[in-house]
Structure formats: C-alpha cells, structure tokens
Amino acid sequence: MSAAYSPPSGDIPILHADHEILVVDKPAGLLSVPGKGPDLADCLIARLRTAFPTVLLVHRLDRDTSGVMVFALTPHAQRHLGLQFEHRRTKKTYLARVAGRLEPKTGQVDLPLIVDWPNRPLQKVDHETGRPAQTDWRVIKASDAETRVHLMPLTGRSHQLRVHMLALGHPILGDPFYAPDTAAEHPRLMLHAEELRLRHPDGGLGHKFRAAAPF
Image 1 (tube, helix red, strand yellow):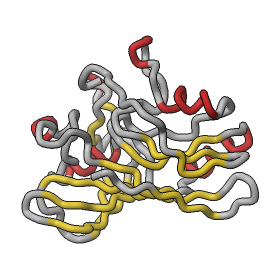
Image 2 (tube, rainbow, N blue to C red; image 1 turned 135 degrees about the horizontal axis):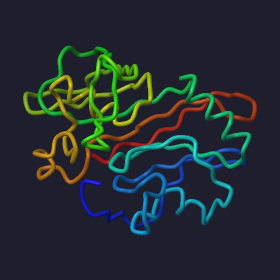
Image 3 (cartoon, rainbow, N blue to C red; image 1 turned 45 degrees about the vertical axis):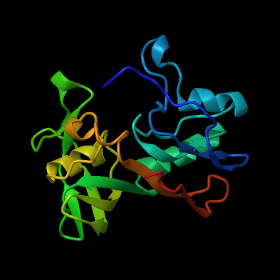
Image 4 (cartoon, helix red, strand yellow; image 1 turned 135 degrees about the vertical axis):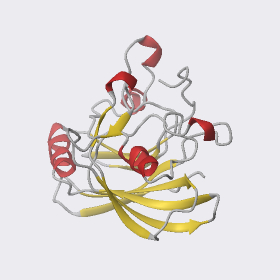
C-alpha cells in the first residue's frame, strides 16, 4: 500500500440488482476484496455482503480506481460472468485524466506487462517475459497540461492502464505509484471505470452499465 489505508465511508451506490447479478459504483480508496491483515479487512465485497449475503467476486478494480463493478449472486452467474471476462467478451471503458497532450486522437498501446518483483505491487513493461496487454485510447479533450481520454483495455492485466499510460509518457494524474509527483495536486487517482458491457447470465441478453465519473 502506498499509504495508510483509510477507506471512504458512506453507502455504496447500487446501479443494478436482480436474481443473478449485482452492479455497483465502487468508490475510490476502497479495496475490492480484503487485504492481508485486520487493518485491510474493510472492503467492497464485505460491505455488500451485509445486504447481499450470497455475493461472489467476478473481477476487481484497483483500490484507487472508482467505477462500475459487477458481482455475481449465484455460482452459475459467477461462472458465466467469469468466462466472459476470461474470453474478453465484456467491453470496459474507463475515463482518465493524464498528464500532457496525448496524441494522436486515437491509438493502441501494445506492451507486455509483468510484476516488478522488487517493487511489488508495481508492474512494468517487459518484452521478454511479460504477458500480452493491449489498450485502445480515444481522446475526449486535450490541452498542453492534461488530456481527458477514454481507455478501452482489451486485456485485463494488473495496473494495465496505469503502466500503459506511463509508458506513453502520459501518466494518469494523481497516481500514487506511477506519478507520485502529481498526487499533491490531485486528491485521488484520476481513473474511473465508466462503462461495462456484458451478457446477462440468465438468457444472454446484452446489458450496458454506466456510472458518471466524479472528476
């Protein structure tokens, strides 16, 4: 952890709930699942379990990232959704604010990633032993100081968006790991999971869930 864990208080916004799935808007600063030790026990899934006792994990967001997360409420839904993530059948769109003017307007980062063992949990680009990782981007608005951009990960590596933007020379603002010099000016990591598209485990109908970015 980059600092003492001080998770936000307050209710978790529920975007959708039915007999199979639960979709929420995760706040920044809250772990998706418990960390090691009692001081890291407070997390999103633990809070959700009080109202949804059968809740099951499908995927994660970094502690410092906010936005749309889907949980399963049955083992069937967990398997169904898990396969969608594994086979890249879900579509995820993130909103980020990054340093500098990102050009061109659209593009793709294709750089393999691996854990930076001496500096865990940081990740790094490694062309020899890294796992394939691709991220598409689309600029929304840009100035010389910063760019507002949509990021669409095609793979789901740990810290993928954060390391890919850093590798382009445009780190995500407020990132305590990869751009610590910007953290003083930004109270949080400027990365938000804005939209998630998936197929419902009961019948396979396509659904789109959105949560507006708080920045």
